[in-house]
Image 1 (cartoon, one colour):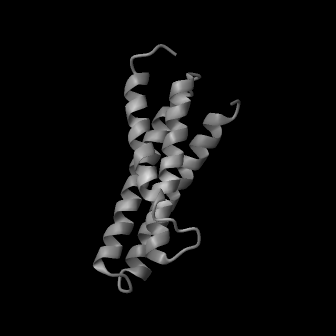
Image 2 (image 1 turned 45 degrees about the horizontal axis):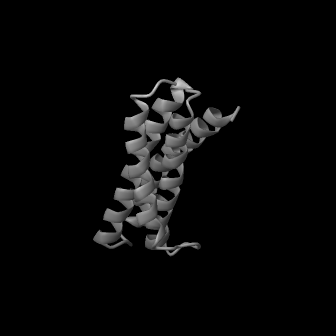
Image 3 (image 1 turned 180 degrees about the vertical axis):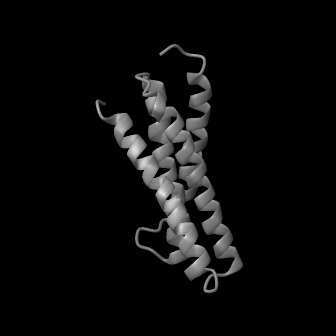
Length: 124
């Protein structure tokens, strides 16, 4: 786990760049070609990605050695990949679209937030 926080922070920064880039592409290229429902799905996925990118960067700045905090970050990453990829892959008909992954991703995100609440009461 020597490089855990470096990888986590770099990946979270990538999420931030993806949010900005995909938001720009959505407004300039895809807005006229997507249905209102599809635009809403993309915006929802990008909002989840942006919010969790900031949360990941915030806990990554602490570089905690606590295993529970690292588990929270790992679950956030996994949850985001399952949730956000599934939403975007469904809208844009991308490969590896498994609609069953979105609820699993959401459950991973919820579990991570609950573990984060527990971590606040535990000593590192």
